[in-house]
Image (tube, rainbow, N blue to C red; front, side, top):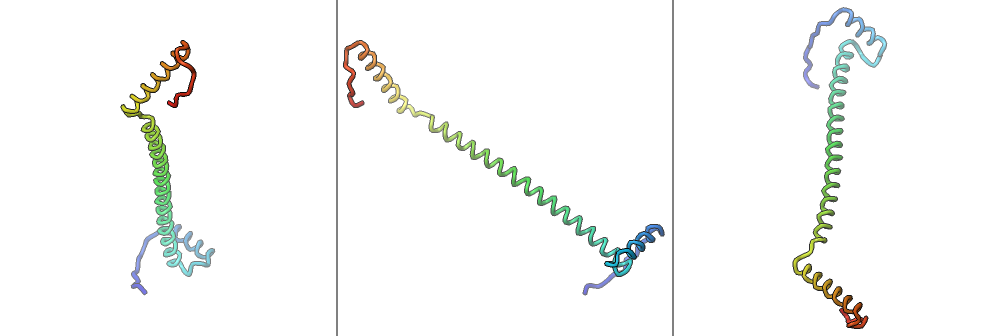
Length: 122
């Protein structure tokens, strides 16, 4: 067992009477010294538990923020991907313009009766 040290404290007589009354009403304490030791330990334990609880809440809030940011990042990546799919290269654009020009010209010639409305296997 660890070495014990004597600690003396001064308290008002009213406070001492209140402690003694509490001790007499609570048989879980062996004597006044036991009451003081256990009260101090409970206070320390409660303070530690409160700090651990605050730390746990802080970690939970940080995790929630991280998950929210991760969701936003994923959404942003999806949007960028969609924009990249919509970007047309110069060669593709030339092909699209040529195809549209061909279709428009064919439509005009068909409407004018110059060519027939046949499928030529574009």
